[in-house]
Length: 472
Ligand code: NAD
View 1 (tube, rainbow, N blue to C red):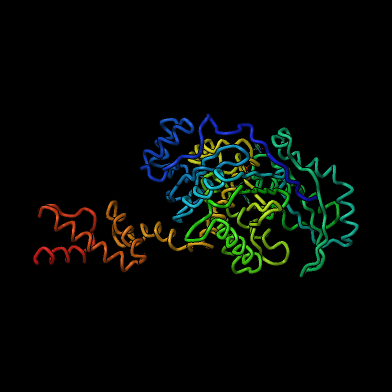
View 2 (cartoon, helix red, strand yellow; view 1 turned 180 degrees about the vertical axis):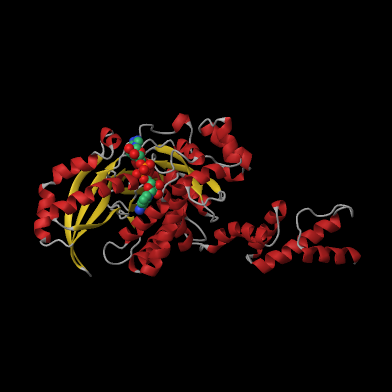
C-alpha cells in the first residue's frame, strides 16, 4: 500500500480572523511590540501573554514530564511571518538557537506569497508498527496464516484504543514480510494504523505489544520486537511552490533569471552528491525542527524518518527539488514522511505548545504536517538562493555577530554596536569582538562623567585597561 497524497482543505481559508500573516517590519519591533502583534493575530489571554514573556514551562511540570528533572532549559522562540499555504495565512513559531533561520523563512515566505503560490497535499495518517517473530518452522506458511487471520487480528488491535476507532481511525491492515537476517529467516508483521490527529507512537506500540504474543502463538514462533517504525512512509506530505516570475530573485549583481538558474544548478549538485545533499537537507530540517519543537512534536522521530526516506533509492538524496516547469516557471517542492500530532504526547500538556498551536490555527495533524513541510521548503529555498548568489556567510554572520559580541562580554546596546562594526568590517571573530568591546567601553567611559562606572562589562582585564586609560 503506497501513501496517496491529496490536498487537505483547511476549514478556515484566507487569513484567520481577517488578519494577514504578512507583517512588514516585524523584525524591527521590540519583544513587547511583537507580542502585541501576536495579540492582534489571535487574542491572547493575560496568562498566555505572561507565559510567553516569562516562562512557558515550569520546573514542576518538567518534573512530571521526564525523570530526574532539575529544571527547564531555555531556547529562543521566534515567529516567522508571511507564510501563505493553500490560500491560508499562518504564523510559524520556531524554537531554535541558530540565528538567520527565522529571518530566512520569513523572507522566502514573503517572496513566494508576493510572486507565486504554495500548495500542499497530505496522505492518510498511517503509522506502521512492526512485530518481529523468530524461530518459525515454515515462514511462508506463517505468513499465510497471519494474512488468513487478518480481520480477527485487526479487531484485537482496535480493542486497545476505542477513541481512535470512534474518530474514524484505528488498525487498517497487516502486511507480512519474510526477512533474511544474520540469524536466519524472520517473519515481520507490519501493522498499519490510522492515527488521525495523534503522532501515534504510543498508540501503535500498545496495539503491537498486545498483538505480538497472539501472532507468535498463531505461527508457533517467538516474538521479539513490537515497535513503531519511524520510517513513516505511509504518512507523507508534499508541498510545492511556483513563482510567476523570478525578477524578485535578483541579488548580488545577478539578474532574477541568472539567480534562478544558479539556484537550480545548486540543487543539481545536491542531487548528485551525498556530501552536499546532507547539508542541503540540514537546511531543510532547520525550518522543520524549530516548528516541531515549538509545537511539542517528536523532532527526533521526524528527523529519523526524513533521512531514511532521503536514502530510499540506495543513495542519500535531497528531500526538496527545484526546477523549471513546462511553462518555464521556477518551482520548489518537498516530499517527506511527517508523523506529527496536534493531540497526544506533550501537545496538550506543555502550556507554551498549547498557545503556539492555537496561534497556528491548525485543525488537523495533516494540516500541521503541510505547514511544517512548507517551513522546511521555504527555509531551504532561502538558503539555496543565498548560497547561489551572495554566499551564505554575509547574512548569516551579520546575525551571528551578535552572538559573538555577547560571547566577548558585551550586553544590550553594546552587543549591537560591536556586532554592527564586525559585520561592517566583514570580520566576525571572537578576538575582534573582544577588541571592539574594549574600544567601545573606553570611548564610552571617556565620554561619561568620572563617577559613572560601566554596568555593561565585568571583565577584570577590561576594568584594568579602563583604569590605565583614566590615568593617561
Ligand atoms: P498518546 O500516547 O498521548 O496517545 C494519543 C491519545 O490521544 C490516544 O489515546 C488517542 O485515543 C487520543 N486521542 C484523542 N483525540 C484524538 C484524535 N483526534 N486523534 C488521535 N488520537 C486522539 O500519544 P501518541 O501520539 O500515541 O504518541 C506520541 C508520543 O510517543 C510522543 O511524545 C513521542 O515522543 C512518543 N514516542 C515515540 C516513539 C518513537 O517515535 N519511536 C516511541 C515511543 C514513544
